[in-house]
Amino acid sequence: MKHVHFESCESTQLYLKKEFSSFENDENILISTSSQTQGVGRSDNKWLQTESSLAFSFSLTPNKETTLTSLEIGALLAMFFQKHCSDKIKLKWPNDLMLDPYSKCGGVICHMINPKKIVVGVGINLSGSIKVNERYQAQSLYLDRDEVISKFGDQYSEVVPKDIYQYILDNRLSSIDVINSWNQNCLHLNSEVIIKDGKSELEGIFLGIDELGCALIQDDEKIHKVVSGSLFIS
View 1 (tube, rainbow, N blue to C red):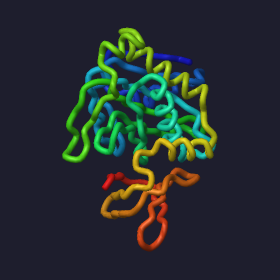
View 2: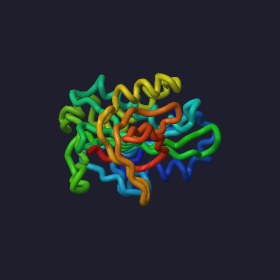
View 3: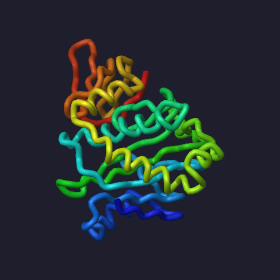
View 4: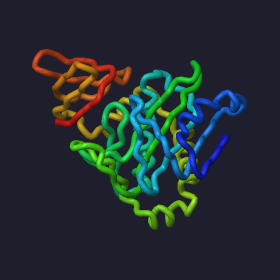
């Protein structure tokens, strides 16, 4: 593993994408930072960072079913923090890490670099909270700063991403295991949801994900497969 840590960085994801070719002889690359000033979320939204947050990006071989890769990372993050945290991370389609229906604590975003490598960006709040909008608040895992340091040391922003990345590398999931694990940790399974994508909107019961990671939504007419969009829990 090649691990580069910065005290401050605009975006670990953008840095790794820009500098990826310079690491071409390194199989596994991790970029972490103690302070990320211009974090990027889904659809080019800004990732709002709280005190004691984790911000890191890494290279990864895609899942055998490429579209399942971000869902696989979400499932593995939920599994990792189940071992280290009193709060239990739940998953919201397509790429959010949640504590409850209105408290987001992190997210995952993936970009294909070449047919064999994906850059994965991860942001996770460990303490503090930020009001995002009237519906959602960026909330923290139940670990205050002192508890984080007692568990991982005062270099937690460097140590924890390395532990997480190694955990992911050691515990890759098959496509069927991604689907099963993700559905088991889904916050809104069998619940009423709304998915908005541009001007289109679909409301129905979330039945889980299919073999490609599409959301399965049942309304009065049929079961729909949704490829992309923003999900809201009714």
